[in-house]
Image (cartoon, rainbow, N blue to C red; front, top):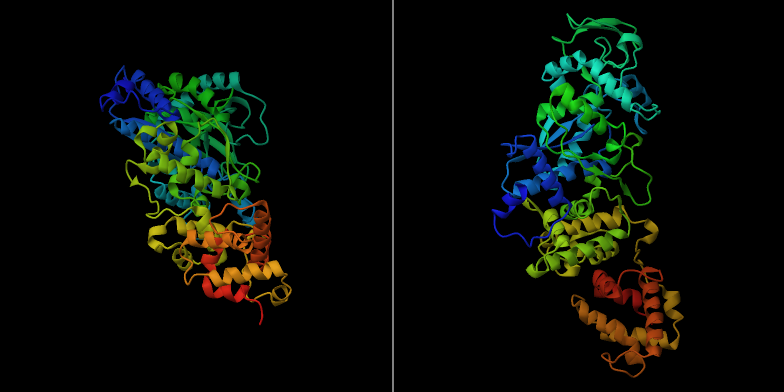
Length: 560
């Protein structure tokens, strides 16, 4: 059915396929099967995350996996939504590094009830939602957002909660089959901690007095639905009526399958750990039908995304690279491409260092390939998915494409000046954006200062006075041949490489001899020393262009 619907839009038998195509096929087949053999009016692809800290590049895979699959389904003319749940009703677990230790008083409260330490946002949860929302908007990702605090406190899930409590014996029998030894890292609200008849209760209230979930359940009345508890933190005791008061939430392994049914989810990914034996997805598959009358969605597990040179990312530890930070140096299509070009189960690292240069080169080469219809393959398909979305259209790329390594080299020499960089490469700032800004940001904020280029302020008169005969001849030929403008990169390249040839009686167009090659290395080393006090640096034609004729003559002219 899904494949047939694709073909109704034209003969696409020769279209390349990728993991997105295959995952969308599986999601649509699943949607048909749970809807009696026909596609539902609306296909739901879901994502979810707890905004407990910076939403890092590993978390981003949750959003983008769903986004790409939903985009493929939409491309086939099928009504689909990307439904995202903010699990902001989850408990605040620990105080991250860099936050006032006094925030430990909020441990156990919902993330939506914990204050933002900076006071900029209405809550801890909103502090971490905001930059992710902005980054997703820049990447053209459109989604329907659901806040779990609102859903639970409004009573939207009341019947589902009562059902889970009523069937708690069935839930416990499933849980017991999968239960493994609890580790220190296991979520504290995954299962109840109360002993006796209320052990493993599927619902946990937040204390009416102090707002924490640090409660011990003392009794539950099935007829009245009164749930009594004592708070281990404040010491007070309360009774909450589950049928009329909305003061708690289902434990995670029950909450997830409940939402699959409530929202009618057809596809939802998760970290590979979610699909391991005894994990939330495997347990949820067992619970969703018998308890809630639903069906588990089509699922794909995704692997770890790291950052080169950094340990595994953890939001609670702070200092982790986020999508917003990556977008400071990567054009939006390139960041999307990093995720769509690999199958979800492939782990990879995002490198903020010198690898950025190679990444841009690879992207530019693929962009040229994508312009040739007969070369359309899976790699080009990934480029297409990365470059545009159904809601945002084609994502911003520079009107004039200058290699990122050239822009960053010029920005390096010009201390990040956008204006001088644009003038040096012969284009307007507007035509070079957004790449110009990202190149300047990368070179000034992400490159080790020891690897940066520092232009001499004044000529090295001592070195210029000590030139040997060959060096003096090379500099004389160079200064005599310097044009009034350095805008023509080919002209500058020919001149710089040609000086040692002319010094040995050859023409600038002649092939270099072994002696000339040796001279060129020595000449280039001399130029780098005199211009930037280093043995190497940006390509010399680029360096010359960035410095301009006056500065070059000042630094290379021997004293009279």
